[in-house]
Length: 447
Ligand SMILES: NC(=O)CC[C@H](N)C(=O)O
Image 1 (cartoon, protein in one colour):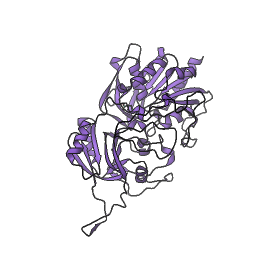
Image 2: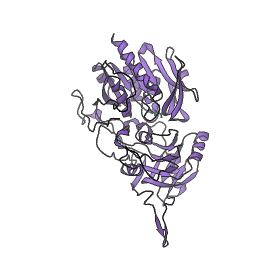
Image 3: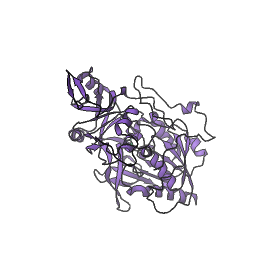
Image 4: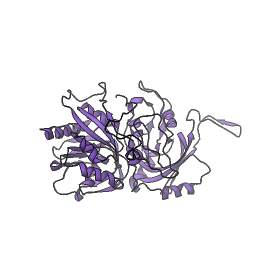
């Protein structure tokens, strides 16, 4: 896959970064987000969610000398305290400190780097159910954004060796540089079963031995993620153009796109591969920040508008719902994940928090129009309640695990949306055709 552009230039029509519109950042007091490793179009994030100390050395360097006795292995030095009062001992890698977040489990077998860089995980600890993580290291091409926004990574085994022809860094080095906490040697299966039974739980991860379990439990119990606008912490600061296709080495779609469409993409936490797939389908893309006025977008007379994925509660961002309301019906639109949920709300529908959500690359969805079943990549905790939608809005897809709404279509408003990720990354490519459907929608609107 092609590397992300290092810099982003704002189109001539956009105001300077000093304009009030570009100032999307908000602070949450003492809560801080880890600094990005380098420049790039992102990010608005100077908010968040805990207190992180400096990075620590990792597994191989974890030998302990205590009481004159050398123990050439790393000892448990971290605790994960969940809001249900359970305490899990673990070994840390990456950053040290104390961090609060919501624990969710992801069932993908591969693609941990894409997961780590998916901005939709802001505020969450991702627990990988695959017990062996880190063996392929990381590389510069598999980033879904220029920064990690997740709260931390929870895994069973950290691979003791890294071996892959694309690897440029170990997972441990990568997390340390990005100031992200990770833990391993913890019973991920037991935690997953707990999450399945009790639903997603808030947790606090700490390497700080001076804090008591009770203190950490109190932090977990008082921290909230519902009703919080997480989008403003991950969206870009100013508009930029995107022109990278999926690299020819990885392209799986047959045939070249001959048309050219201008799409404006709202960045609610957009993944690079959504942009790459749209470009491969023949789109020129202008990415705009989450709070960019609809009127400015419509002035550009785009062929279509994409509402992207993004973190957190769709009911906590009324400004984004209003923007969607102002755009739908005027140009063809496509919503992905958060974008789909915002469209649901803009149409007058309701969203709700699921018990433990869908996170992984193995979710079967059925396209009710054709009966076709795709295995899809998913990452969401909220869903649209189809009963709350107005007449004329069609549920096109359902998740076959729980029959929840996974896609919408409203021909009157030239609107398509999916609750999951047709760009995959990571995950199977079955749903890539959804981008083609958006192209058809824009084509039919032209003639
Ligand atoms: N991937 C996403 O866009 C996530 C959508 C939303 N934040 C949720 O958790 O449901």
